[in-house]
Image (tube, rainbow, N blue to C red):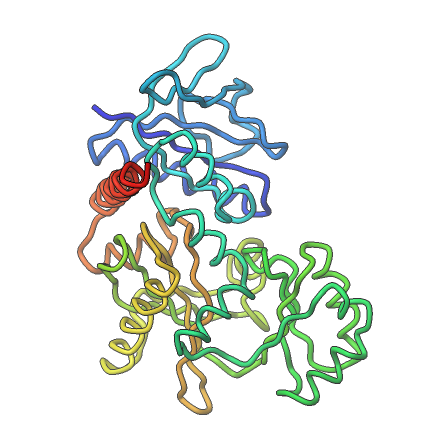
Length: 355
C-alpha cells in the first residue's frame, strides 16, 4: 500500500483551516486505499511527524522530522523512526504552501505531489500576475490596477487613479494573501489611507479592484492540463458587507453556502467554459476552486480568482460540489493522487530527454 505524505498547518493565517482540511483528507486518503503519513508544520515552519491529524493545532505532538532523498527513496525521518513516502498531498493553504515554495521542494526531491505545479501555484497566489494572465487570454474580470511600493506612500495618487478609472467603492487587497486577510472595502477617499496602510502589512504590492454589486459563484475543477473535470456551480450568500475573514471564519452566520446556484443552464455552461479556459491559461494541474462574480445590475460574468489549494473540510465548497456531482471524497482524493503521480512521470520523461 502506497504511503501519502499529508502536509498541513503552516505559517499562514489559514493554519487552523488547514488542520481541519487535513483531518478530512486523512480519512479520504485511507478510504482511497493509501496509508496517510501526517506531518504537522507549526507556525515557525518546523515539521512534526504525527500518528494522526489533530484538528486543533495545539493537540499536534512535538516530534520534529525531516524529509530527504535517500538513494531511490524519499524518506521522512524523526529521532525515533523513519518511513519512505511515495507521494505528497500538501494542504497548507496560503503563504509557504500554496505559492509554489513547497511544490518546489517536492520537485527537488523528485517526490510526486498533488496539486498545481510551481509556476501555476506562484501565479495563482499573486493576484496581480494572475490578473495579467487572465487579461492576455481574454478572460473577463472586474476593472483593477496594481498599487506599487511607491504608490503606497502617496494615497492621494491612488485616490486620483481611482477617480480617473472606475470610482468608489473599491476593494484594497494584498496581492499575495488568502482568506481575505488584509482586504478592505473602501467607500470614499477618507478611508483609503488606512486601508492601504493595513493591507501593506502583508505585501509590497496591492490590488485596487472596482467594487460592484455582485453574486459570488464558485465551481470546482480537477485534472491535469489540458483535460479537466468540473462540478456544478455553487453560490456563497454573504451576510456581511463583503466576504471578509470574519465572515469566513469567525462568524458562524457570516455566509450561507448553496451547492446549487440558482442560475440558468446557459450561465452555468459559461462558468464551466471560463473555468476550464482560466485553469488552462495558468497550465493548472491537480485541483482548484474557481470563483466568479455575477453582476446583479448588468448580468455580466467576471472571473475573480483561482484557488489552487482550496479548503478540503467536509463542509468546504470543493468536496461538496464534487459530492453533489456524484464524486465521493475518497474517489476525488484517489484521482488527485493518480493525477499527481502522472504529472510527475511526465515531467521526469521530459527532463530525461533534455539531459
